[in-house]
Length: 125
Image 1 (cartoon, rainbow, N blue to C red):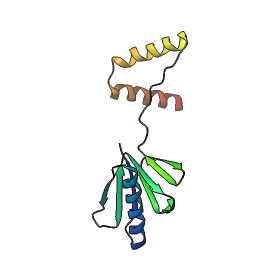
Image 2 (cartoon, rainbow, N blue to C red):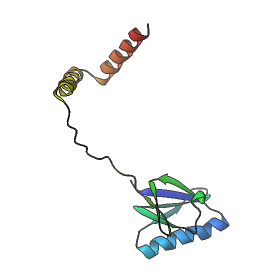
Image 3 (tube, rainbow, N blue to C red):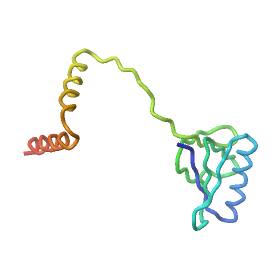
Image 4 (cartoon, rainbow, N blue to C red):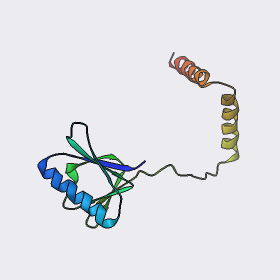
């Protein structure tokens, strides 16, 4: 997933779009620039998009990615992917998780959802 921002395609914003383009060209970041079908928006897409301070953050719409402030502007980076986390669980919890896994393995998703729904209705009564 790449970072993606948009800006309205107005005369003032075209100058701001050029500033964004030049900032990324000078820093060596490749940037794909495109327009909406009705040419009302300008889209920027890349692994990282650098936006200078001279372009107000309020004029930009971040469609995908994370914004990080830096000296001289801000960066829009691609969103972090999932991370692996190692957990140390006590024996009782591991046994309970294994029991749930065994119970679920022999059933379809539909059966499990139906069972949970029925338990919820019984609990509600």
